Amino acid sequence: MTSPWLTRGPTCALIIGGALASIATSKISGWSLSEQQVLQPLALDNATTSVRYLVHAELHGPEPFDGLDGRIEAFVYVKARAPSGATATIELHSLTHPGIAPAIADVTVTSPDVHYVPIDAWLACETDPCSEDFELIVHRDATADLPAIEISGWVQAFAQGTPTEIPAGTSLVITATAKP
Image (cartoon, rainbow, N blue to C red; front, side, top):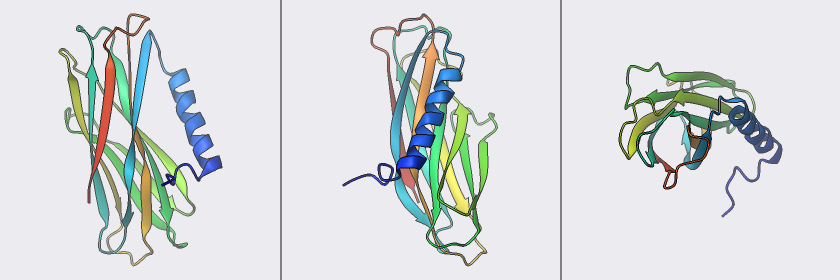
């Protein structure tokens, strides 16, 4: 089965280009590594006004994690099933570091579009594995009687560090589990 992302040529090309530009302009001081996980497509309607994805990221590698920096990035595709002017809010929270302000994007669904929501990660890695958990929440107005909103996309974990060569045995894993 073909992913809906693969059939959205121009939009996907724009988003992928933006992601690559984001990586290219970030403060790369040495090695870098990224991994993606597709989000299960779901719909928000009058009965189901929010959806949650639990995101788990693990960085494995030799200790110490020198000069470690990174982020979790959510790319959320939002589409209304019919023209409506519906609104949605996308929130990305760190469960590992609840003191970090969540990343939030308010969206007016006038046409299909992808929304980028990043949050810092790998803030206190001392041992292997370095695990962090996040929650991605997408919700819409519960009081409005509007057509359903389709949600899909992906999350990406990005890590970078020193020295300039990636240490042998370094790997990155990310999972996203829908909790409607």
